[in-house]
Every structure is written in structure tokens, then in C-alpha cells.
Amino acid sequence: MHIDNPRPENSWSPRRDERLFLPKSANIRQIYLRCPYLLDFRLACATLSLTHVDLLECPIDFAMEFLLKCPNLIDFHCRIPVYPSKIKNPRTMLASPLVLNHLSTFTWFTNPTLDCISQWDIVLFEHIQFPALKTFNWWVGHGVYYLDLIANDATIVFLSRFPHSLTTLELGGIDYNPFEETFDHFLPLTGVTQLRLSHCEYRFVEQTISALSRRADGRSILFPKLTSLIIDYRVIGGRTPPWVMFRAECGIKLAQIVRSRIGLIDEFKLVVGGAQLTRRWNEGSWQAVREVMRDELDLVIIENGFPVVVI
Image (cartoon, rainbow, N blue to C red; front, top):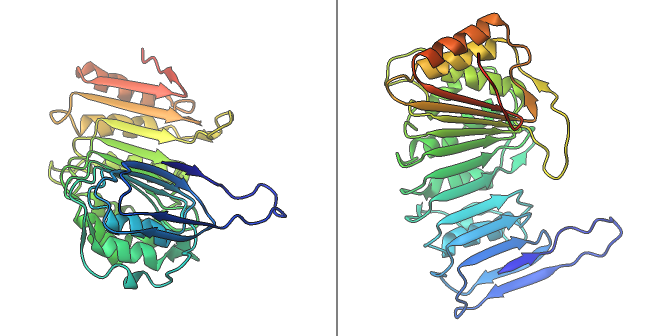
């Protein structure tokens, strides 16, 4: 099922309020729903057939409804949720553990209120469990500082429950964080092999690179099995020239990231889109990368669609 009813392009256009009811007999496996003006949504009962849900600009309480009544979810994406339509207090919907045993991919955009996350996020983080999760895409949203997010008790508990099956982590739209120690909350995620940083503040990206390059014993390396780092500033639907330019130290940090994982990984791939990674590299940066490649580790760097040749 595909329903796409976005906001009117013109502010004077009339609102198109909708109501959606899925009866008990509905045998739907996938649903894409974009309805910011959805006033009423009901699932008649637990919908066992529904395994793939993609919600864009839908009221947050209806997103929670899907999580509660679709126990066989495999892929769930909730992007840019809007204010709740019917239920204002999330604790009236979710007050006990929500276990989704089959959930493999989970995308969640937090709902910022002033300088922190909303009660909807906190309640979800307190109760949701996904023992088979492999991919988590977490978009925080500019205006919510990473420190405020990660220092929240619900967030800390949330991260501590992540299973070892998690291999792909995406962090999106995160602003600068002045304290590197907050990365320690991600240390239990030892199975992560791919990290994606999408449209994050460039100082946060540099700080993440620094945290990944920290020399430590094998137990405390951040994402010790990491083989892929993707940094993405591309603008969807348009072509813009790269404008984010990283400092020369990033080349040395990259070499340290790879060197600290020798013996744990055989290859490493760095992909950068919409930014300049190597433009400021000096001879020290290039030399550090060359030395890592001499250690017979397969290092690939892709910058704005083109491979970087290291001579």
C-alpha cells in the first residue's frame, strides 16, 4: 500500500484531513504512508502480515500505533514525524516492554522540543527492545545537541540494550559535541562494521574520526570491527559543489583508525560525499596513509564519487 499526500505547496491551499482504517481482514505486507494531516488512524487488531512500514511526516502517535500492533515488523522507518493527532501523552500508549523479535532495520527521527528530545522519544527508548536488529538509522535533528541527547538516562539505557547483531549504524543531523567521552556509550556496540554520518556538523564528524582513532586495548576500541565509514553531505534532488573541507589531521587520524584495527579487519573503505577530505592533506597525512597500505591492508578512499589514488 502506497499513500502519498504531502503538505500543500501553497499556504493558502485547503487542508486535506484524512482518516485511515485498516480492517482485520487486511492482508498487507508493506505500507508507505506520507500524511501529515492524518487525523484518525486505526488498526483493528494486531496486524501479523505487516512486515515493512515506511512513514514520512505522519503524526507520531500513529507511528507508535504501528509499532504496538505489528509484532512481525522487519523494517520500520519513521522519518520527520509531526505532532500527535489524537494522543498527547505517550505513556498512555506505551507502559510496558515493547519487544519486536523480527525487527532488522529501524529508522527513527527524534522529535526535538527546544533543546532536548521529546517525551515520545524518551518513552520509546525506555521500552523498545529488538533482539535481532542489524541496522539502526538515527536522525537526531539540528538544534538538539548530542551531549543533551546522549546524557539522557533513557538514551543511555536504550543504547545499552542494543544486540550484538547490530552491524550498521547511521547518525544523522547531529550538532557539535564538546566532550569526546560521550562516545563511550557506544562502546558496547562491538559488532558495528559500517558507520554512516549523514549531514552532521563538520566538527562532530572530525570528533568522531578522532574517537575512532584512539589507541587503546582491544576491549575499548570504538567499533573494533569497523570496515566502512561513510560521510555524506550530499543534497538530495540537487547538485551542489562540495563546501565542507576537513583539516589535514584527518589523514593522520584515518591512518590511525585503520592501524588500530590491524588483525581485526582485512579491509577498510572510506566514502565521502559532498565534502573535501583530502584537499588540505599535507605530506604527513599522505605518508601516514601510504604506510598503512604497505601493511597489506586493503584501504579504499572514495571522494565525491572518485577513488583517491595514493602513490
